[in-house]
Amino acid sequence: MSKITVAIDGYSSCGKSTLAKALAQKLNYNYIDTGAMYRAVTIYCLRNDIIRDSVVDKAKLIECLNEIEVSFVYNTVTKTSEVFLNGEHVEKEIRTMQIANNVSAISSIKEVREKMVILQREMGKNKGVIMDGRDIGSHVFPNAELKLFMTADNDVRTQRRLDELTSKGEHHTFEDVKRNLEKRDYDDTTRKENPLIKAEDAVVLDNTDITKEEQLNFVLKLINDLLLTKDEFNKPLAKH
Figure 1 (cartoon, one colour):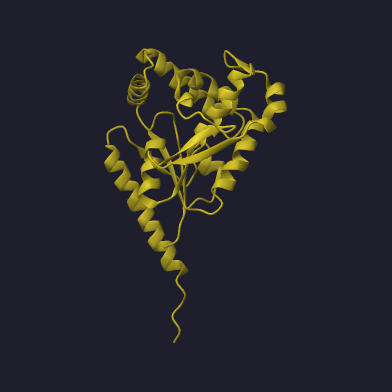
Figure 2 (tube, rainbow, N blue to C red; figure 1 turned 45 degrees about the vertical axis):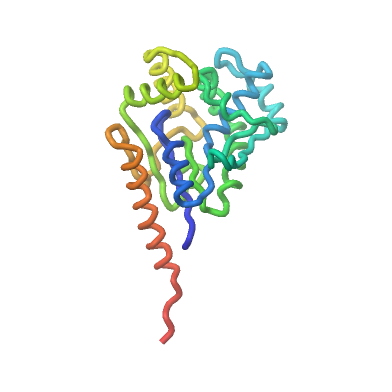
């Protein structure tokens, strides 16, 4: 059966990664969390005094870009790809509130996005990939066979993010998390370089009131229908 590219865009804490990981496991596709790539760059910037209080030393960052290598390694235990920064496993560190508070400033920089997009396109060039982020369907893979745009109620998203942080030992107030999400939404949708927008042909998926299982089954049906149509279209004509 043919393989396709699935592009998943949407707001923070809408469950993009959760859906993408489940799809990748079901379909035996590669999963690429592009947000993790920008978070890894943010770690580098924090460690090297390139960003302070969300203010970036842009010239210094551009000068250091060639020293920043972001890669993914498949974890056979968790059955998912995890992010590495210059060979160091940083999967846990990238999920902290400190990174969330600074990543938008890093991801808005043109040169950073250009480097990450080159890597993303290389990772997905052979199809059979599920990629999530903010500009996958609109910029990285505009010709993806399936594009999803995920959204959910703000309070629902906030509670999901708060629960995730609490489970990892980080304790924040509902109001602080909500402010962080609202700021990231604003930064993502108003930045100059490839802002978060819904691609014209994207399927909107509002998961405020549906379960993860219902969501997964809905998208699997979309993919199955696409694959059947694609294979039927590519089937050689019968000889008479």
